[in-house]
Image 1: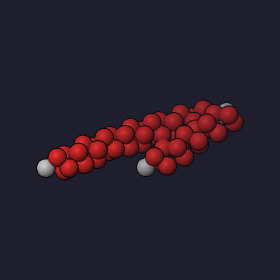
Image 2: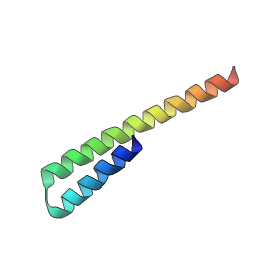
Image 3: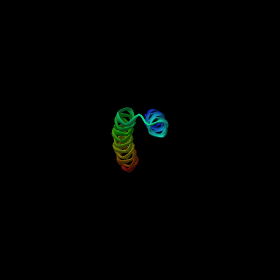
Image 4: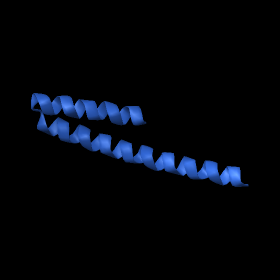
Length: 55
């Protein structure tokens, strides 16, 4: 999922360089959403791992 976020970020940067404002904004928004979803899933998996080890 982090790979998808980085891909959309790259698309947003390239679109911004070439002047496609709408595409850049949409790609940046998707990249942000995917990054935060990845971050939440990573934290949940860390908590689950620590909870399983403590049992």
